[in-house]
Length: 263
Image (tube, rainbow, N blue to C red):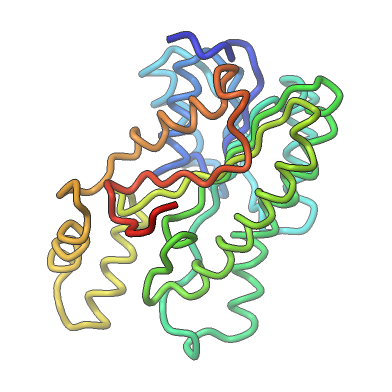
C-alpha cells in the first residue's frame, strides 16, 4: 500500500534505539526524507548506518539533548534549512525514572518534565507554522499505555505522558482545519531497552529476577507475548500518511489487549 508520503520531510526524535528507531525505519521504507535525533551522535551514526543497510535511505543526523532550552527549535531550524520544512514529526522521548512518589525530588520531576513533556511541546511549536503554511502536516507522539491505565511504580511517566495526551488532543482540534493531524500512540509492554531497564528496577525492588518480571508482564497481556517495536512503527507510518487524513486527536493503544477499558 502506497502511503503517499514519498519525499515528505520526517523528523523522528529519540531515534537511535527502541521505538523511535523502529519508527524511523518504517518511514524510511516509505521514501521520506528522514532526519533523526537523539542525544548521542555515535548512536545516531550507528542507527543511520543500519537504516541505510536495510532500506537504502540515508538519514540526516541531528544530535542534541531536547531537554536543553532552545535545542528543539535549533534542530527543527537545521532540518528545515537542509531538507525542507518538516512535514512529519514523530516525537519520542526517553522515559523518566521509575519508583514511588516520595522517592522523587522536585528537581527530578522538573528534569523529567523538560524531556518527556516540554521537549515535545517545543518541537510541535517549531514545526506547526510550516505545516500550516503548506496546509499539510502529521504529528505523532509516542506515549505509553500508562495514559489509559496508569502503571504502578511509574508515577512520573503516568503524570507527564497524560499531560502530553491532553496537549495533543487540544491542539489537534485547533489545527485540524489546516490539514494537520495530531495523534498519540500508546505502546504496552514492548521489547525495547527501556523495558529491560524497567525490569531491572522492578526486580531489584521486589527481590526477584528480570525474567520473573517479564513473565508477569506477559501474563497480563492477552496476546501472551511482548510487543515488537515494528508493530508500533507500522501504525506510526500509517498515521503519518495521506491515507490517515481523517484520524486526529486519537490515542491508540498497541498493547496486545492489556488495557482493560472500553475506550
